[in-house]
Amino acid sequence: MGRLFWKIFLGFWLTLLVTGFAVGLAVQLYNQQRQEETALGQGHRVRSRVASVSTALALGGPPAARQLLRELGRRARDTVRVVGPGGRDLLGREVPPALLAEAREALGAAGRGPGVRRVHAPDGTSYLVFVVRHGGAGSRHHHPPGPPYLRLALALIASLVFSAGLAWYLAGPVRLLRAATRRLAAGELDTRVGPCIGRRRDEIADLGGDFDAMAERLEALVGAQRRLLNDVSHELRSPLARLQVAVELARQQPGETGRILSRVERETGRLDELVGQLLTLSRLEAGVTDAPEDYLDLGELLEDLVEGADFEARAAGRQVSLRAEGEAMVRGRAELLRRAFENVLRNAVRHTAPQTTVAVAMTVDDGAARVSICDQGPGVAPERLAGLFEPFRRGPDGRGYGLGLAIARRAIEAHGGTIVPRLPAAGGLCMDIRLPLTPSSG
Image (cartoon, rainbow, N blue to C red; front, side, top):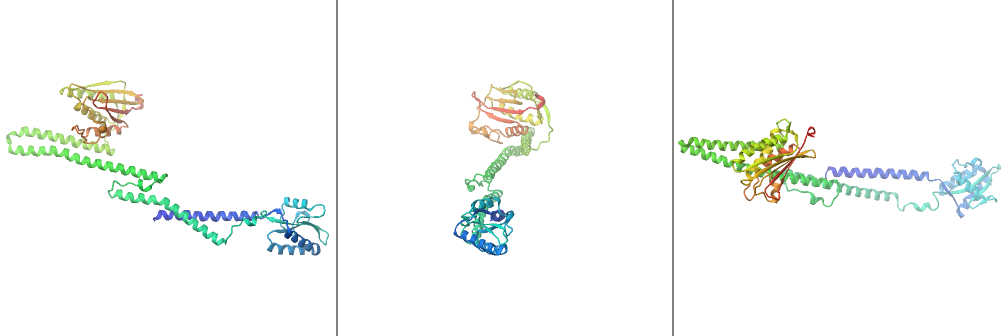
């Protein structure tokens, strides 16, 4: 049991104690205030008290009646009132007007009634003698049985049990989350707290769900990073191995130095391009971009890219076409967007079938520019669409996507857009890209 448990336990327990004490004090004060006359007393004992006080008043006057009233007040629960002229009691106690009126009504014409008498003192002063009951008839049975110390002890034990149970209920999941956090920090990325929390439906259960989602995301990210490192090492190993072979050939065949140097230059270019793509992907994932933002016409950008891609594609028996509707002004980093669209376009040209056309279409609606780039290649299996944007992902047919699509997705998302793969009914693969327009383009 940690510090949070004791804080919750002591907090709730002290709160219960203070609340119980305050409520008890308030009830006691309330009961004291209610110790007022609520009904006229009746019965044999009442008549006896009224007769005793009346005799003392008639024979000894007010002093004798006062002494007897004090004696009866210490021994009896119900008190006798002796009311003289002006509605004042002999002992100075207040008499509610309603009870005084009830006593006078019960007196009757004979000067006495059930529990009520009119008595004349030796000096001739007339007094009204009657008994009143406190808290109503039968109120003496409302007090709980047993000594007060036992009731106090039972209340303390009940408050202890309640506070301990509530503290345990609140602090238990926190301990589970703390232990799970430590295991996660130690590298156990498969740590989950959902099964341990059970069927709770509160904020702590929501926190446990968020922890599980975070742990699942971390596990996926770390796994992706590990796969990326493996893929990068594999991609770098091939050109490095070819460079080593070229160096050995240059040593063994001095006469082929020109051809070998050309090969070395090509492999060096591939390495440079791969390292550049890795740096770009790393910066995008970290949210670090050095290029300043500016306004650019997306239609002009696509026209320039399609013209260059079509020139290269025609050498391989392919074509690239563009259909643009509307004007689309976006704010962003021109070089980053150019690289994103170029990567998607080159990937489509690379995989479209010979003698086919890569169709690029742009429309403007709902404050956004929508660009679709569709090839007529073999496409991919539906279950592999979600993995197209993972670096160096390759399918069973060997079709690979390297870093180009991964960079494209990060770049598009960095500009508040989306890129979604789609399998058209006619075959091939389409990339649907959406970018928000600037207010000035509307």
